[in-house]
Amino acid sequence: MIFKPVINIRPTTILKAFFLNALFIGITTALTIEVRRIFDTNPWTKDLPDRPHKLIATALVSVTIGFCGYIAFRYFFGLGGGMLAPTLAYKNFL
Image (cartoon, rainbow, N blue to C red; front, side, top):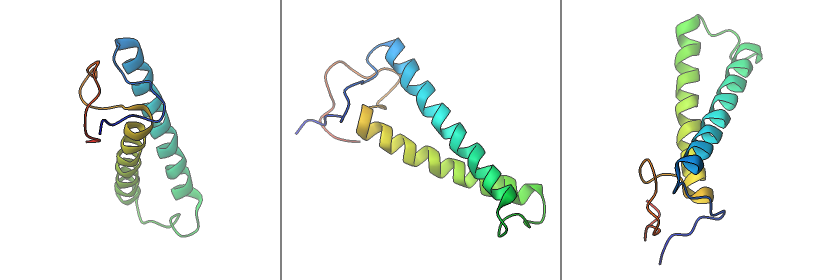
């Protein structure tokens, strides 16, 4: 069975690859900034002792957001599989 993304915007050209990667980076950055804002204002995380603790917590959440975002973009748009995806689709999801 050949893997078919939900929305067929597979990055087979440089323009599509640039668009999908820019969209992915923008979403990841926006969510990371919001998480850091929540860390600064939430009563449970506002009292983290110093900057390195907030930095480590934000970095871990950012990596998790990036990983989940990559899986979502792989499923919805077919992102991944190299700099430019081949014209013929891959047979497997990963």
